[in-house]
Length: 146
Image (cartoon, rainbow, N blue to C red; front, side):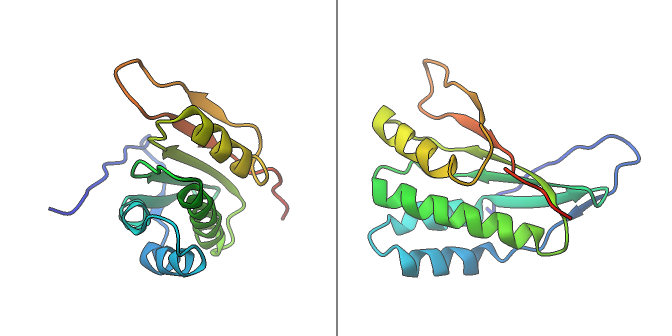
């Protein structure tokens, strides 16, 4: 069945799903990055979610499907930039992006870190446990101007 994501917030928090057309973002990214793995982009787009909390903070959650090439990581970076821009289109400024990258190789992990460090503040990263391949990262904006 379709993927579902449960989100829990403190009582009194106004949480509103942010309308991002992740399918369109995925298609545009795929068109610009034809050598990227289309399955990774399609799965990532299906597993992307954004919610605005009290009209102050946009929380974006993404699960990426095991990107195995630099080309696919380049496309993933482009997709994430588009996703953040789409989520902020409603006038929000503050955001946080949490992504489960599933990057298995250290050299690819470093390549992805280099890409996202160009447009985000230093990341908080939860290193993978020995029984897992992936890593969960938390990104935040480098600037927030109103």
